[in-house]
Amino acid sequence: MRAYERLLDYVVVRTPSDEGNEAHTPSSSEQFELARMLVEELRGLGVTDVRLSDDCFVYAKVPATPGLEDRPKLGLIAHMDTVSQFCDHEIRPQLTPDYDGGDLPLFQSGRTLAVRDFPHLPTLKGRTLITSDGMTILGADDKAGIAEIMTALETLLAEGIAHGPLRIAFTPDEEIGCGVHSFDVEGFDADVAYTLDGDTEGEIQYQNFNACEASFEVTGVSVHPGSAKDVMVNAVLLACQINGMLPAFETPRHTEGYEGFYHLLQINGDEAHASLSYIVRDHDAGSFEARKQTLRHIEKLMNEEWGEGTVTLTIKDEYKNMVSVIDGCMYMIDNAKLAAERAGVKPDVSPIRGGTDGCQLSYRGLPCPNLGTGGHGYHGPYEHITVEGMDAATRMAVELVRVFAGE
Image 1 (tube, one colour):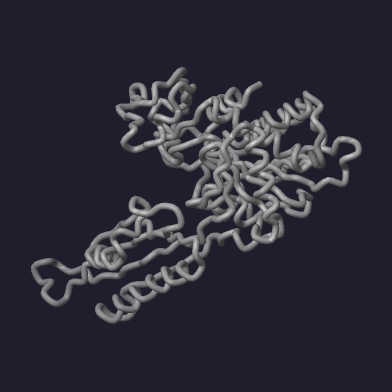
Image 2 (cartoon, rainbow, N blue to C red):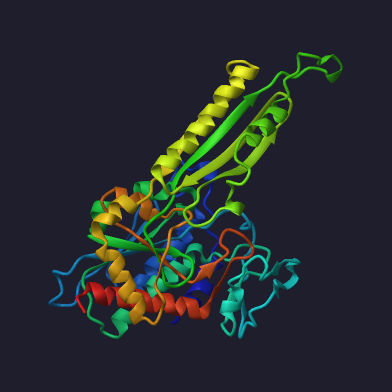
């Protein structure tokens, strides 16, 4: 079975994580449905050491080919959950064979996958493009990674390709940043691992954002507007003032590469109370701390102007840049580059403008860079991937196993 065929089976099982339930793993019960499917599929491939944990982690161990037991224990990891946005009803994957590289109307949704918004689209000309019907996400993030790991494993076992000890894991709740907190690193028993959770096939990533969440709570004074002179403190206007104190061009729309940003997720409220929610990102640890200090300074200035307790800032760290861990084992990046070349894929070592489970796992003692899956436009109805890109990512995974086996 090819990777894209598995993807089509997986994406129709909706698995949105629930940020409102992040204290519980998994945050949504639907993730167990996919987990059980994967357990049965692994067993169907002949993998006998498979377990599903009470908190919805799928773990599998594949013994080494005789004579290769002393090779490094290599892990391959992907996550089962998706974002909750655009995932509130049935997902209908659509295939567009021989895609012409231009604007593509997404069926009856009224949305168009446009070259203006996704300039890489002409490079996909001639491929078979996979999208949703434009009403939902597709779910390739990260079910494409799962499909590619499964297909690579099937290829290794069916073709008798020599390999060292392999470890497979499929995780819940990556999208809300908390699932991997429960990951059984010791039981997984890998020396190193890779997540398959990136974009274009051939991507090799070991430099991710430092990340935190930040929220401002604003307490106003609400009185009748007719008698509000020197009394009313409109919390919504103060919320606007807070956002206006941040650099206007340090947002996701205006940044790329290693450039960090402040991203306003939500602003809510009325005259009496308002709230702002942000995520803050930066690759450089010093710049990241400076961004957090900017937020604290805004809190201080607002309280000096409007009275102590008017504005309360809460900052919650999420994950750190894994570069300091991977710098000590750069052979993993060299091995991935070699695997890409052997698979006929151009290796692209580039920073992650986000994070993966591998960020947290790296700091828990399991070095874990990230590899591309062939997908694009994640977290919205414009998500897309190609059959050929998935095939290439699968070949790269197979070659990576062979490299680690000593070939």
